[in-house]
Image: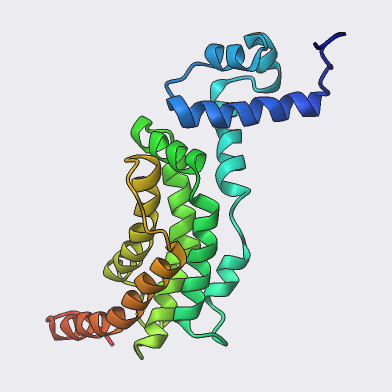
Length: 223
């Protein structure tokens, strides 16, 4: 039986308790959840919660930083452009690591709730993904396909869509697991390798055909 007074938390410990509780709370109920209910779950008063986070928006911003920004690995950006390794190997390594970060209940559900509620977590994070992952992948694919660099011919929206397809196909597995509660491949690592192989094998020919079509169009400059 517990005796004595409950241990008093330091300000740092209390802040961490609120942040971790908010992550669990928003992942479960979405951004319609009220701070009053969150405070109740944490066993604290709402005024105490607001001492650490003066608004719900500031708490959501901290959740975004904790779940998405802090888990981003800067070395992914270096990995993609490392031409000492085949692009297929780079992408397999990237997505094996990336799925280890995003394949969890909180990451996926907060992301989905954000998009549905109009909270700008989804938009902001995908902006980072496009800039730091998709654009470099498209640039490297130009090299694989023996096409002009993006310095010579600007990146085309159609190229980015192919990168979105690769990324989205892998991410959709997380949606199946954490949103639809459907099974996903047991051998996730092997599945990633197969998906990347399909991308590497099919995309160069697709790009060459696209560029050839662009050149044939009147008034369009191309490779």
